Image (cartoon, rainbow, N blue to C red; front, top):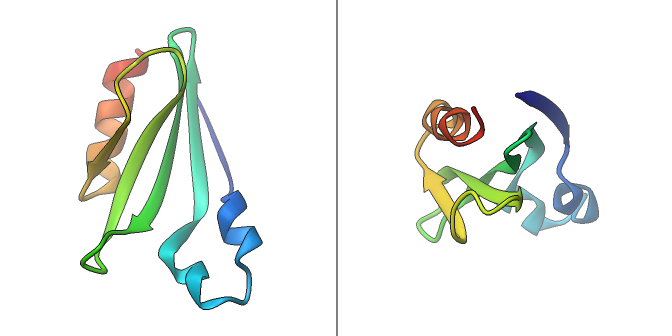
Length: 82
């Protein structure tokens, strides 16, 4: 499994704006032969930071999944990609 870290494109687009605080600065991209998953930090409706995963390649799961911690999200990602 490979992991890449980059500045989240939305974070860059919103630079200097109030909405920039709705998404974390980084996006993590995980990949293997099974597919590719994006992990980002976002604020939910109650203004709480959560971690969200999304399948970019391969049909690993439907829609998005949200977790309270990065550790929980990475555990799920490893399970899906290994």
